[in-house]
Amino acid sequence: MAQINVRIDDDLKKESTKILDSIGLDLNGAVKMFLKQVVLQEGILFKVSLKRSQIIQALQDIDEGRVKQFDDIESLMEDLTDED
Image (tube, rainbow, N blue to C red):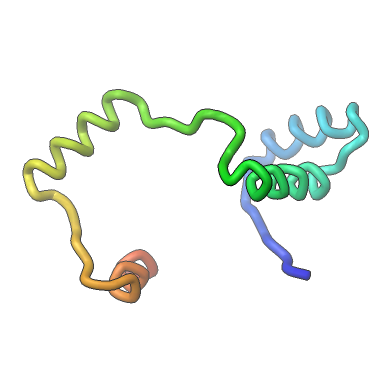
């Protein structure tokens, strides 16, 4: 069985734990339920979106060449994990 570790804000953990306790779930069970639904639904059950201003900025960055391009996944992963 795999184990995951997630860092979250103390207040978020406290508030979500309180709500989950009231419906008879613990945080671990809620995360398992979420992940099972991701698999069953082949996606996330709620809308995930960028604000319009973020989309506009991203398009401007692309138009002005302020993007990185990679030839392969290894180069991308190296860049993402680079500590510089």
